[in-house]
Amino acid sequence: MVSAKNQNMSYYGYILLFSFLGPLCLSFDKKVAYYKHVPRLILPTILVSGLFIVWDQWFTERGIWGFNPKYVGGLYLGRLPLEEVLFFVVVPYNCLFIYEVVAAYFKPVNSPPLNKGFLLMFIFFGAILLYQTPGGWYPSTAVTLALVTSFALLIRPPSWLSQYIIAYLICLIPFLVVNGLLTGAATNNPVVWYNESEFSGWRILTIPVEDLYYNFDLFIGFTLLFELQKNRLSFRK
Image (tube, rainbow, N blue to C red; front, side, top):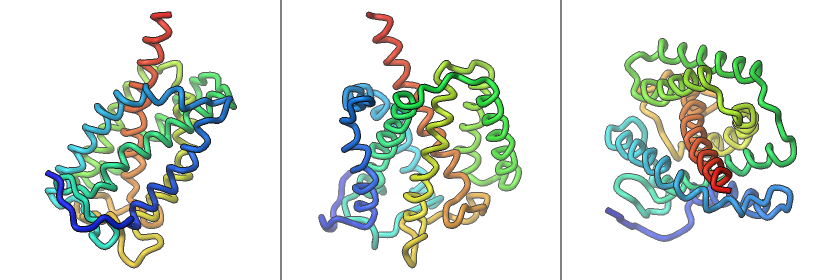
């Protein structure tokens, strides 16, 4: 159900808009030609973003996190402001843009030492988060899913894993900016608030550490479907 209060551009809306403008304009760079891959984003957006929106809606209903009405425009899909729904379109688009830039400009060779080192470290810190808050819904879901995925990647690493890891690490820079703005780095109150009892309490400035694992889950889901479509097209050729 969609409800509306007003149609003014919100603080959250401006964050999404300005984070989207750069990748959108650079999508026409001849070397990357990201615009050609946009059709391959349709399936991940439907499946992965759809799943995350359901997850987001459920957490919002349970009071695990929520949204400050002062910083959103007033259009809602269920309990989620429209800006939060658009987050699951804009952020994966931007992350996959960086993923394709890494491929076009750096042409990374798949590196087993890099893959193993990153995943083991990621698993180690994730395990600490789970130990810190064994009953917290946020680490129990986001971190556990990331750890299961990381173990699967260790056992059977895809050929694009190093490219993904490099892109993920680069994405941490805009991630810290955008998530910082959403969690109160530049405002008196956060756009997105978190129930303190449902996460570890560890933050990077204002950002819950679990967000690193949540974004990993979202990005890896998009990348997997993105690459599966690429391989299917190559096989047909």
